[in-house]
Length: 78
Image: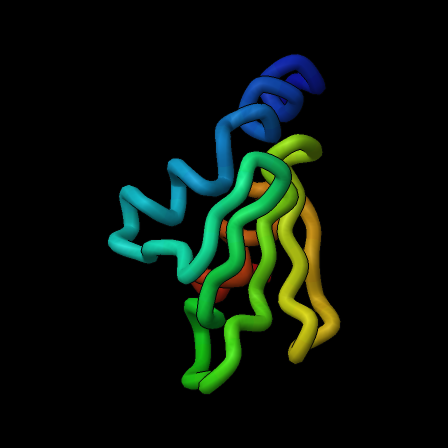
């Protein structure tokens, strides 16, 4: 895959990707959106999307990255 293709994919909004999968934020402000983890049950939202940088982090899992990393994690790819 070309570098320009990867750059274009990484610009796709993570929030929009999650919404298309039916995953809604618990809280949203202009700088970030906060979610319950899409892969496990949690009582406190620990999954954050930085909407300005288009990056995510799951604080409970200690994982994060780009939309590509998130797709791979959600779909079980390595």
